[in-house]
Each structure stands twice: as C-alpha cells, then as structure tokens.
Figure 1 (spheres, rainbow, N blue to C red):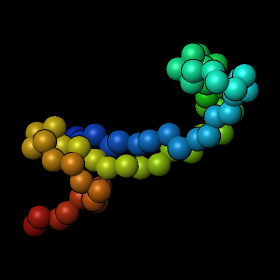
Figure 2: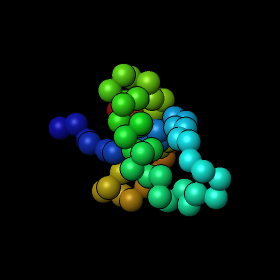
Figure 3: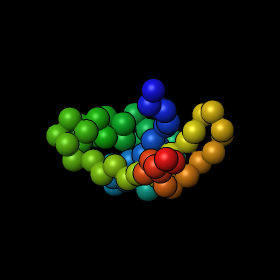
Length: 70
C-alpha cells in the first residue's frame, strides 16, 4: 500500500488593489480575494512547493522523494 503524505504549497502571486492612502489593508481582503480568484481562473498564479508533512510521524520535510528501503 502506498503511503500518503501532505504536500504543502504556497501561493506566490502579487495582487494589487487601489485604495485611498491610509486605508486599513484588512478592509481590502474581499477585493483581493476577488482578484485572486480571477487570476486563478486564468491560470495566472504561481504555486511554490514548500514542504511535505507526514501525519503519522508529525515530521515536516523538504525532501519529497521516496527512498528505496530494500
């Protein structure tokens, strides 16, 4: 049986919204999410592999390759 682990990725995409100077960035989240959704639909996002997580052992690792233990 093949062992299943979690592969974690980060979205590394710049989203720009215009707002008056002094605007609290937290109030712009809905606009940012809308623009991000549109970029995802157009395939214009950059996904970056971060690490793997093994839920059985609790270990994080950058090494994603399966080692032959034979």
